[in-house]
Figure 1 (cartoon, rainbow, N blue to C red):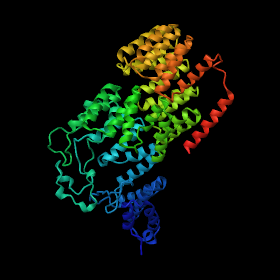
Figure 2 (cartoon, rainbow, N blue to C red):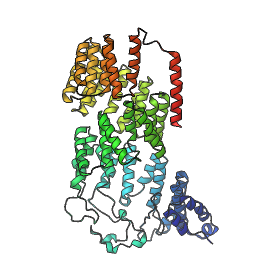
Figure 3 (cartoon, rainbow, N blue to C red):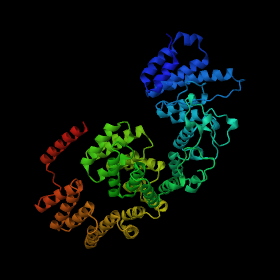
Figure 4 (tube, rainbow, N blue to C red):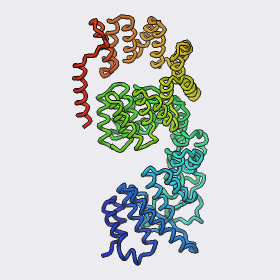
Length: 599
């Protein structure tokens, strides 16, 4: 019995890629196939085998099969040069392979796109771009346009990327690319009674564009396209010419979503959060909107609110991985090691191939081993070199390792992908560590220019001025301006208190911090107060505030170390003299426990 391609198609339709690729080996090596089959049949068999290998994630082997098939397609094209019949491809329900070509003539553009997807999976973006550019613009599907936009963006061809993303969204012209409705008779309306469903018809291929491609909306916003220009691509409120399934009114939520993304991309974080909050009222417990809100809150330093939203997200969907590395970095900053360890274990069990997992691992290991943490951050970038939090984590670790020059490179990489407050903060810290105050001031001013209503940006300029004795008065003015703009900005309050301490105005520092302690139960405020009291030999007051900090956050390492030093001072001991035996025992115990947790 000869091997039938229909059997392989059945296996592919059922997601049995292993069996399909094994059976495909028999099909492509069959003596009958090799000696008697037409180039078309050979190409079709090779594509089926390529689909099976793609489903098995053997992308290099799949690429080879598709390229061989393409050679046969070119041979077929030469033979049928004078044949004017149209060739339409079809798609099946095989979601794990690029697409199916069973039951229809070979479409050379589809084979090129399969080759593109293989190159993308292998991170060969330049080769992928060359291949997909060979597909004529009028023959590109919605998915092809979106893929091309992403590749142009990776290659920094932003104008071309914008054009592709606009093609994804624009409803100016609908074209029945892969369907049985005659092109010549198409008038903007589709009569579903004319559609032949026995040809593996899929509705998505009626249109080369769709206003609900939210990936394209976000990309256009990040590329600097205004909300007005994006909204002009969408259909009008009139029902005339609207597709039958398009019953949602874009004006109800899609326009607000566009405005939110454009605000966030332009660093108008308050405006973005306001739009997202309105969307959340309309769609309660929407995980995507909650993730966007939590991400922005993490960026602008509203850490407590971000943590609450991440916890809410995990309560709704405990299997989500997206943005969980942002949550891990917040937990690390809060010294909540038990929650951080639980999060990392959950992520490892969910999907250990995602970049977010290794950023979270990096955050977990940072408190113990900076170099191991750095290796995890670098691994996240090997998985996805456009993962912003991976670059930010890498930059922070280089600063911890006293390598500010490498940190600059990491933060610059993050900034090129998306300029946000954290990349500016990292760059300023790096330049100050390199004693490049001029570059630090330029970067801080750039942040302030981009985010004129951001108290964090004002504080950043103040930080640069505070690094030199001659600039302390300017720093004080910037810190005070930041506090007027955002009275609850504890970072500026702590920086201003430190400035008072440096200038010997300890009473002013205490007065400022005590005013904030009354309204905010924050461990960092109590730690700073304890440090000021300890510096003025008011040890009992310092003890009170270290204990208060630990009541708020029992895992706070700075409070633990400060309390340990203070207790030695109160006993008349040198606080800097290490207890070697205790330190070694503690280190061994902690190391054993951590290794056990990771295993």
